[in-house]
Image 1 (cartoon, rainbow, N blue to C red):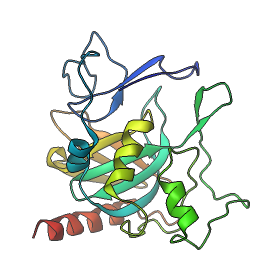
Image 2: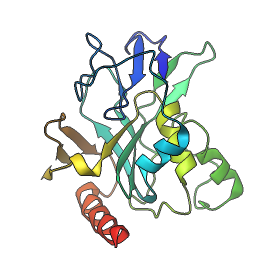
Image 3: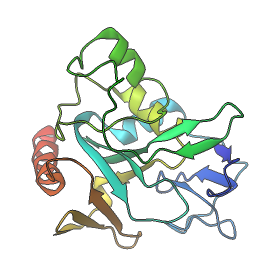
Image 4: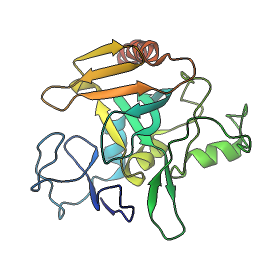
Length: 216
């Protein structure tokens, strides 16, 4: 899966790495996150296989900012039975170019406030993101909002998204509103809490409990 960007502040070429499941800009044909060779001729994983890797949605953790350059940093974090899915807030211009949406507050025109089970809302969730607003509840149960198909679509249709597999996360280090995910030998990920409540670390610990229960 390859995206060519038209926005100057983003890389011109992004590829979904099949080694670490992150959209990356290849360097010397290697993924900068996991050092796996990126072969543009290699067929994409089928959606059923990818859905199995992403696991079942357990909860949404709200708005976060990823500490990184060049790639979109503002987005939503979703906890699954096998890891963490980051979905960036993106807006597609009329000319087809993608740009990042950095706003973190729900605008007054948002039509679905307080109605997360409406058919229109569920249908919208299955569409590629075009600036998903922040949720006032940072630990909303995901089962009513997401399914494996929509998780898969969100990863492959939103350049800049990534999936951090649970098996690679060795520890979580909180510091104020930041949480660092240590993933040696992969790159560490630093998440900055953008929720009103500032409960990212507590939500991550709750997710760990839900993951353990899902294994039983």
